[in-house]
Image (cartoon, helix red, strand yellow):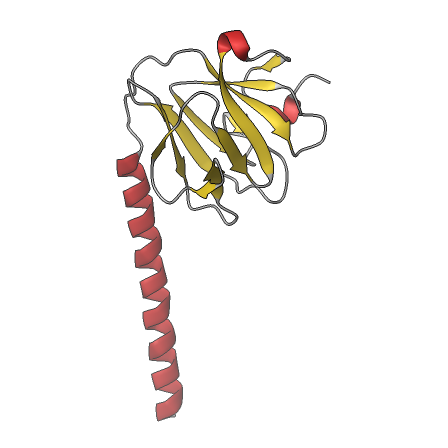
Length: 155
């Protein structure tokens, strides 16, 4: 009976540790993403390869854009390798900044894993769940423009 109580106690401590860790990550994530970004210039993510049918299409970035599989995301990528809320891109007043939101498969910029906020430059390659995109200005976007919803892009 004593061993069972000990095992239950260990399980309880591990559970509490995981809950505290998740809360800490959420708090940390919220403090990294600004609540009032400045007015962003015309920036787009242009698909280069990945989800079939999206190559060459461009998707508008707002002052704060959440990218993920969840239908409430600003840029929806409906594939299993993309987390529900995979990454965030926002305008900080001088450049776009990207942050991985604790996704399972990570985010890369120019082949480098995103482990914290990274400033983006126009022309940078962004990989999310095996989908490679390029950050471009409006005048270089080309392709079709969709109001943020990758999963509902024009055919």
